[in-house]
Amino acid sequence: MSTFTRTTETGDYESPSETIGALFEREWTDANTDQHIPKFLFDQDQTNMVNPTDMLEAIVITDAGTIPIPERTDLGHGLVGVGEVIVITVFGASQKRRKIYEFEIHRILRKNRPIAQTSFTPIKKSDNTTNSAIHDYDELIPEFVAFDDNVQGQEKSSKSSAVLTLLMEWVFQ
Image (tube, rainbow, N blue to C red; front, side):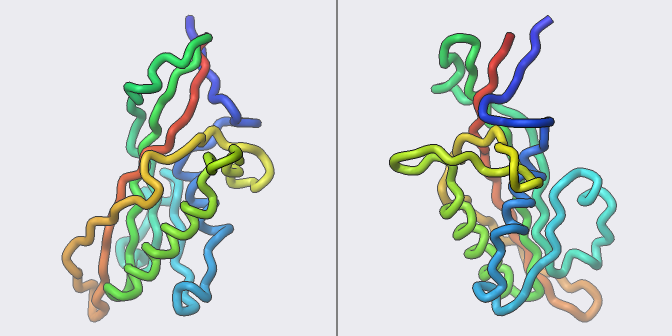
């Protein structure tokens, strides 16, 4: 029977949505978002139990699956490149607020990209001390697709989503 481990990850397994959600929480700068801090929901337990009316101001990160990375499928010595896909959904009380949240997400992802020009700095897990398995992203700035504004009660909200593939290295033994 084969087993796998994720390279660079220390400690117990943590879902990519939890790692990225915790990163957003840690790095969020309310001065960049007109002093607004949305709710951050980033693991299956939190996202499955959300009341839709609580989604007026929220960033929801969900795990969407695992995909092979063709150019990284065999890195030698049992090392395989794998993409773990997350979906980032932004809910804002207005279109302007949603866009401001998207810009802040872009800033955080750019600032914390694991592979920089000259070095590799792993993203920390939700405990902010142990390394995650994230090696890079497929895109530096994920493209958000906006949906029509919805009316929830008397409030008008705006929603967008982006798909981001997080590049991992797994070792199969």
